[in-house]
Length: 119
Image (cartoon, rainbow, N blue to C red; front, side, top):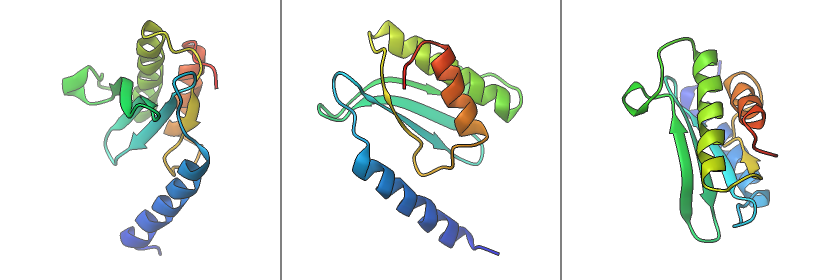
């Protein structure tokens, strides 16, 4: 069985490999995803300027809704797409943050695409 420390190091190595290839520009900012054990977070980041253009979270205090984790992922994806489109961002590059493209990360990405973001 993997220890938590080993699993964390594995994700960090995957994250570093992804970030070596993926960078957000003014034309195509980066849609970064982070998931903790409890909540899900998404940001649209312009790495050239070092600015966060839009963000969404499943935190109840920040507008997240109660429900299952899959419902929360879909809601965060739709919210980040809506906020990014309001700021004039239509195309992004997807940064899964070292997490595997399955489950909540995949649902968030599909909801963002359905909301109008292209990646």
